[in-house]
Image 1: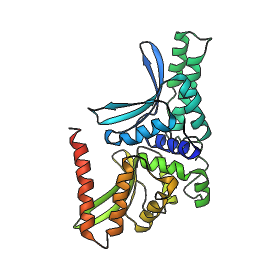
Image 2: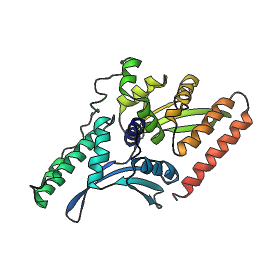
Image 3: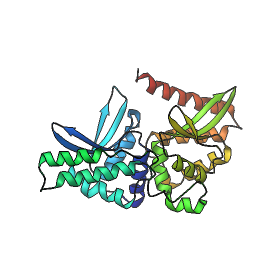
Image 4: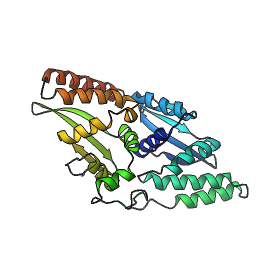
Length: 284
């Protein structure tokens, strides 16, 4: 394993960003199996193979019909020796924390030599009957609030966690609206209102988190906020590793030329639009 502290924290951020279940407990042929998984659009295989390389374990599975790919680990010893130490030392900041605790408890049940298969199944089914509380907040950020100082938030939300989270779940958009090009940053997630407000504070985003179609959305076109985001992820230790790296470079150029060379912004807009059209066409 070639995983330094920064990479470990980034992996936690990536896992927190995943819209799919990352800690999977499923029953197959009468027995429960465990699987750590991180999924991305299939055009972001580069990121998944990067994770596989630095961990030294796992496999990448492609699901062409759904246009997604997943990095997975289901080996019990690898979960114990590689995955658990990372997520114990650098806890998750979203409701994934709840599912990770369930996942780890299930692992201990399955590894028990004193229980029969039936007893293991019964114990895990009982475990899974406990649902995520409606207003659940990860204990890592529970002590923070919208009124917490910038320094307090920064001491809890690592810049490396942010790198992973933003790489896994954000949109860097160049929009053409009413004859004008706009540069926009956005995050879209099912819950985690506190976390989004804390991220908003870190980047000095003036916009409020909004709710739309069952999602919470934080987005901004504010120049100062965009500049903060660009400066944060342009540093050596916070560079993106997958397709987000390519989009980020285009996005920076569009922001730079927005008031200087509209033709260059238009070309960047078309490149991004064509890439997304190509990906979306494969979903049909």
